[in-house]
Length: 112
Length: 220
Length: 109
Image 1 (tube, each protein chain N blue to C red):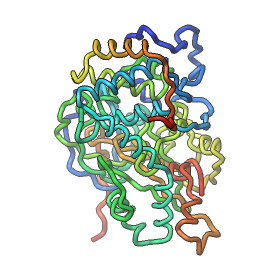
Image 2: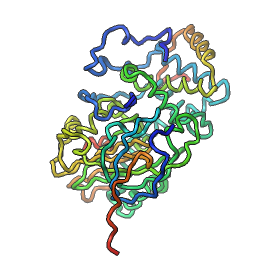
Image 3: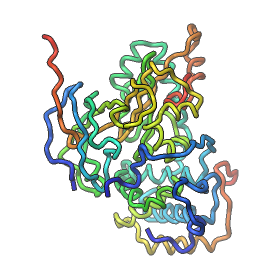
Image 4: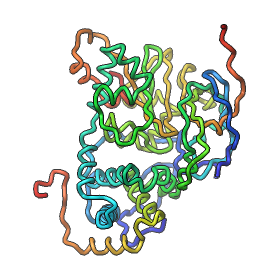
């Protein structure tokens, strides 16, 4: 392959959408997880591994998955690769979470 | 890379015309606790806490730290550089060390920071075409457009057109210099000080400096 | 696997004429496709860093490599560049992705 999927410099593109929104709690959590896992004292893995994992997406997935979705999916894969967590225990926990009653949390949640 | 069972993205269900990028926006503006990625993050966080890899307190502290980082920090640096030539010289020579010294900024993992000084002849603009490297310690979270494939693709090949979309028009005599942070450097643009600001205090100057001016898509 | 080169140059001075190698990318590659084969000039030496293409696989990333800011004329990168002839682009390129074309002229003592 002559060009990796993330290597987009010079490709045709569309008008840049400039609207922004404040970071959601989920997004802040993804940022926080990534920062803590890649920094001392934890240093579970390097950012280079995360980038490499994001770059292993198909071109379609790379374009269609949002930024934070790509990141948390990459953290997922690298945690398994590094044998810090297993795919099975993550999947089991996800099933259990889906059975819980839905509570909508916000960053400004009054009740801790 | 297999599609998970309860994948709430619907983009696999309709055809894409690949001549058009992103047929619809990624669904990321509002949290949806039923989305796969939301549940995934919750599961990972809970398991890492239970296993002692992280603590809930450390996560809260990190979120608070992230929240505290806004472009106001970068604006302070710019305003100081505009008013204090000795600081500016030190800033350009040793950016991160000078900022940490002067403003007592807390940096966990020191990265290589480079300050790009605009001049009357050179206008700098920053991108990371390969991912989304950004000086978060000075500017906070990058705006979605900075991370977008459209910005990353286009600003290296048609920077002036991109700048015009941001309302910034530069004469052809000025060199537009794009910096692509390809290798773990972080860049901060030091914008030109606008005319008519002689005698402004540092606070007044800092209030003029926008995040986009420190990326290079805007002028002050 | 480092497909670009295992050779390391002596430190390149500002102004050295270089060309980005036309090598196939590593699996994790920090040299953009649009710069392959493009001639430029060394702007500054940033420092020595571990090789990201190896760090990406949890290898130590040694030997450490010199990283340079290399400046290119936009018209040398894009055949149909529509901006100003003065416009440039600077990217951070590792030494093992650069061929030296010409040392800068020595300054008058």
